[in-house]
Length: 325
Ligand SMILES: NC(=O)c1ccc[n+]([C@@H]2O[C@H](COP(=O)([O-])OP(=O)(O)OC[C@H]3O[C@@H](n4cnc5c(N)ncnc54)[C@H](OP(=O)(O)O)[C@@H]3O)[C@@H](O)[C@H]2O)c1
Image (cartoon, rainbow, N blue to C red; front, side, top):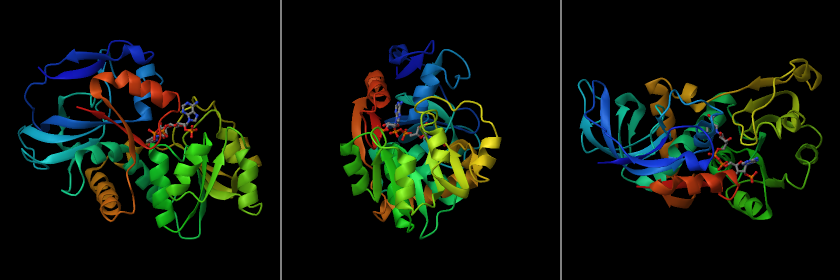
């Protein structure tokens, strides 16, 4: 019988349980996947702790994996038995050896992209894609600020933004992470545990500020991120690794220069299949051309997902992390 990580309650890493699961046959529009590699993402921590409530309990966990199509239900046209595929999508349950999945959420993998790379890049790579191409379309000559620049999303954003001709300012938690971010295209790493990043951003931009901040840290960085923007700049608040942003007084946006704000999620930007395929194609292109190197810097066996969660929350990981099946 296949096994999966399940949670019966929300809480610390110890709520992750390795259990046998019944997978069954795919219904109409579904496929059964045999996973080969599973992606670890910060959003998995939010669902585990209950910051984002799972739809019900007990629940599976995880939104990203690569594998092979083992069976298809009625009406499935997107993929066929034997295809190598990957996904970054609900429903929760990617932390599993095998599972059912809606076929329209799954994309075929090119031969040149191996399963470990795919599991390490789908969710974070599609995020980098929509942030840089859809939320604020980055142009050559732009200067942008990205937080956690040495993390999974961060290293991909640095490389892709640099390729688009931007100057990249990135915050990181240590000197080692600063070097890693720099090696991936970050022009100005700032160790924000030591330096006040809005001051450094003003220095780097000759007092002007940046047109866009991509902020996934949340509570600890929110106001300083607003203070890094130029007038009419765009605050992209796309995560809460330090905790959720408290309710916002809209007057603050006026006082700090008629700022714009958005709170996006990759799920909206890939909800329509045509958008999912456009994003995946753009991502596969830059990976195959070597523009993006997917740094899978850690892996744990899937059954030991709790150890991976502990490392991620303790800021000990860099780049992407894969759980091996
Ligand atoms: N909205 C979306 O569509 C979307 C999609 C994907 C990811 N995200 C968000 O993007 C962020 C990055 O995701 P990821 O999976 O690539 O993770 P990650 O960046 O690899 O890991 C999180 C990083 O956040 C930094 N951090 C700062 N304060 C922290 C704290 N108090 N606790 C833990 N970490 C802290 C750490 O880097 P330093 O030590 O360098 O500070 C840590 O390594 C997450 O907030 C995630 O929720 C959002």
